[in-house]
Amino acid sequence: MLTLLVSRRLPDAVMAEAEARFSVTCRPVTTPMDHAECVAALREHDLILPTLGDAFRAPAFAEVPEPRAKLLANFGVGYNHIDVAAARAAGLAVTNTPGAVTDATADIALTLILMTARRAGEGERMLRAGQWTGWHPTQMLGMHVSGRTIAIIGMGRIGQAIARRCHFGFGCKILYANRSPKSVDFPATQLPMAEALSKADIVVLATPGGAETHHLMGAPEFAAMQPHALFVNISRGDVVDETALIAALAQNQIAGAGLDVYEFEPKVPQALIDMENVTLLPHLGTAALDVREDMGRMALANCIAFAEGRPLPNPV
Image 1 (cartoon, rainbow, N blue to C red):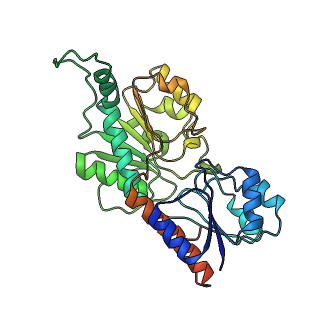
Image 2 (tube, one colour):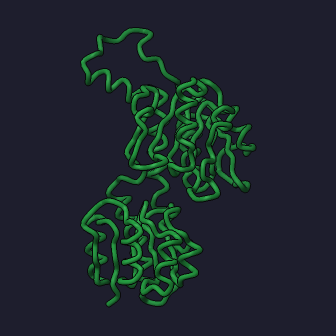
Image 3 (cartoon, rainbow, N blue to C red):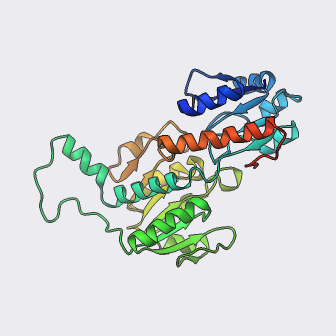
């Protein structure tokens, strides 16, 4: 029976399915695997099921040039914590879980849009602090989302799901920036990124992580946005230059932000925490039981296919 390392415990139903098929070792902690743990995993297990932040980068593979492990079945669609080229050079296949995360992540984007636009977090904090004195006509006026112009940066599965919700649910005009044209079933206009940023009331970042998109949103991009515009990020934290975002907010270059991911996660800058016009969520993008079960089963299906010598369902 092949051995499988699960880097962080998955939902019980998925763990039971994994244990029925493999000799499973599961780390007892919820923190990411560091370099030493990744090196040990490559030496000691046949299959590895890693997830966000596990440090399977080039130095780990350099330290284990002939690993026992032959597959990294990533739990999650994003895999910027894995050096895929180095893994392949060391003889490992890499898979991920596309599709399973699309709708849940898009829903969180809409949550952030609405919370930030309508000042929901700020209002709840005020109420819980006992500072609400009653309704009046100019209390906590925010942005009405219906009919607004939304710029989606990254029009992949998740970007399209966000755009579809905004268009059909709120009658929004959709602009998007993407490396290639996309064919979609709703009105959407592709523009250069700077132009899309300059025309949008709300900007949503939905790109993959990795070296190509590191700090895609920086000082010039925030300067291109309108002063009343809101910025939402559900992609990866390091796609945003967090220092530049803080400066743009502090200098009123943009009106607010909604964030589910952070550049140095789980560290969140105190400057962001202190800003009332910023909505902060603890990386809830796929945090629904059925979604996490689907993700786990998809990762497990890649492991089973490998064990049976079949083509991998979701290679990257």
